[in-house]
Length: 378
Image 1 (cartoon, rainbow, N blue to C red):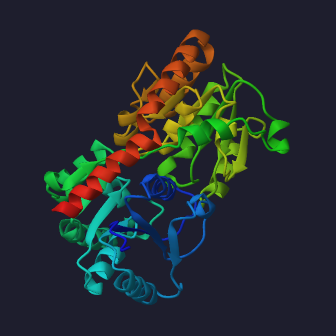
Image 2 (cartoon, helix red, strand yellow):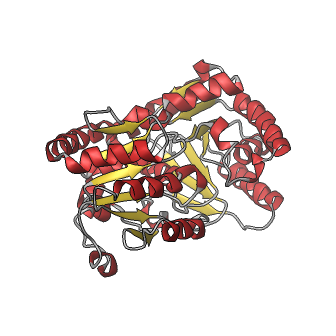
């Protein structure tokens, strides 16, 4: 019997640890396999989330090498499998041009996790230079107009596309990232690594995410230095990245050697978060902030700098606190408020656990199913 399920192919550079990669895995897993023929194309077959993909998903990887070689392999793969939908996460231009070049008449749906205007000024990427940024901005404008549809993780990301890049609003769909709440809560009960268990103490603050400029860990470290004048908190940071050396220098300079523990990348961050008194996020910008929802699902109060993504997750005073001023004193004051007020901490924790249910995987997967089928019908 002929398989009449529409074919959908997600395209990513790899499954190395990041919010977009984790979201892609959750979404593709969440799409009903009786309704979709699911596949994922990776330019490089690597990353900690490879084993999280369901066995019924066809995973194909490229040969590596030059950009041209990788692009040619993707085009050949799309021509051979002929998916009806191609959904790139991050590799937008390569996936769009390879799909069009394959001549398969597939719908291309971009999934955008980050405000592009912030992405173009991110100090960790080469296009922060004036001419690189201008060229990339021009290509962005053209590519986003050629995509058949765009899914953004938040209203803030959508607004940025409309106001800065002139993308018609009617071509944008807002669908939040999903969180597998059952998996988070189950894995939260696992024991800590012995070396970290040995230095765990309360009050404990946990932060998680790539050690990158956008996450603004220097702000968090400065805030903890201020906080510790009155509250003997210890900070545990989960993640790895190119800013680690600079962070270690700052920790030493601030005299925080006994107060800050760099835990490296953790496949299961929730076992740390669930034991914390609060979760902190000091990003310069967030398109959404998956880790906030995961912390909330663990029943932990969150304190985050205000940005388009965090404002869409946190209801200030109900399930966490938002810090409008991205300054150490303001962040330290918010941290101290939660850590020194047990009644507030309990109320925020209860609100956080309840709010996280809005982003449950079945709910978000159903929303994606609807969006993708509507694109096919156009």
